[in-house]
Image (cartoon, rainbow, N blue to C red; front, side, top):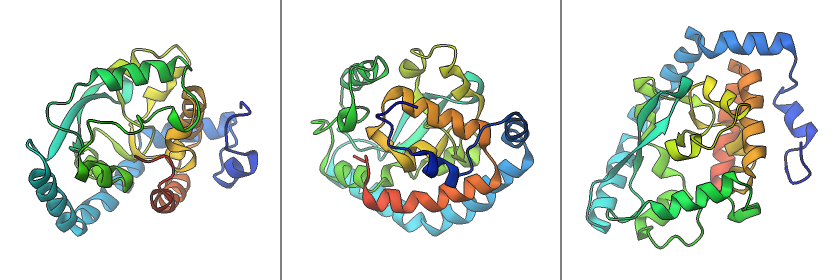
Length: 234
């Protein structure tokens, strides 16, 4: 692991991510098992019902703040390269040009961007007033619960990437597409948008090779503190 990676061996050990053949074999079985799907549904169904007032209030605030729909859809790459529509609360102006983000991602995957300015655009002029708040608090990600219910995503897994980012993957990067993408994951709670492209991929692959119910619960418990600290959000 490179020196710029903030994840320490002790931190990884706390998540049980030592990789060996036996662990990888168990992880592969869990990856497509009913236990993983049951974990998602048992938490997502009641969770979505509980936060439904927040979802409604956010949708109303977005519509009042700027013209356009409350929900934004984008093509993302899922397990085995399957393309699906991801749902997010719209945080940008409805007429925003995606070229700015594409250029940022291409520079990020090439290693031209490092540190806190790596993945997320800072002071993005396309972001609305409500958009700044829902990004900082990660509320914009909540509609992805419906992607989990549909089976496009899991609660825990690698970040769902746009097609133009997946197009930059080489052979070892492709292992990231062997599991459903998630709303949160090992990378998101560890470094979020401050991680380099390769260190992000290594963390996602560590999760894939070590995933289990125990690890999923641990990551889920770590997610709220990461959101509250706003580490790398925005």
